[in-house]
Length: 186
Image (cartoon, rainbow, N blue to C red; front, side, top):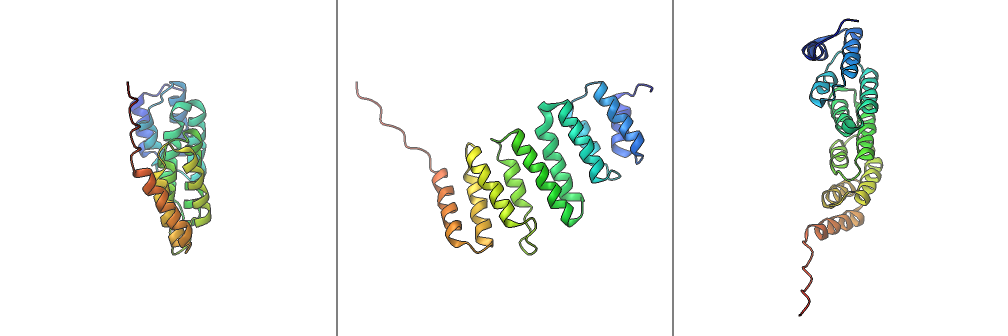
C-alpha cells in the first residue's frame, strides 16, 4: 500500500464514491495517527457512504482516538439527522446523541440537540424516549436550566400540563443566581 498524504486522504474523504478507496484513506489516516476532527467531518458528510459504513468509521475512530469520541458522536448524530430516512434518521440520531452524552455527561448539547429532533405531528422520535433522555440529563448536567425548558415544552406537547409547569418552574429556579451568603462579622 503506497503512502497517502493528508491532502490525498482529504480528497478521498471529500469526493470519492468508491468505498474501498475511502476505506484505504481511512486506514492511512489511522496509521498516521491523524486525530483532526475537521478531516473526519469530510468523511462523515460523504453522501456515497451508507449509514452502516458511517457507523463503522465512526466507531473505529472513537476507539482509536477516545479524546475526540464526543465530537465524532455529535457529528454522526447531526449527519444522521440531516441525511437518512425518517425512521432511521431519528433512531440513529438518538443512538449517537446517547453515545455523546455517555462520553461527556456534563455537556447539555446532546440532550438539547436530541430534543430539537422531535416532530410532534409524527411523534418521532417518541416523546417518551426524549423525555426520559432529558430526565437523565438533568441529573448529570451542571446547569440543567435549558434541559428543564425543553422538558417543559415536550410535556406541553404531549398534554401533561402538570409536568410542564413543574419543569418550567425548575427552569426558572435555575436561572435565579444564588444569594450571596452574608459575610461573617469580625
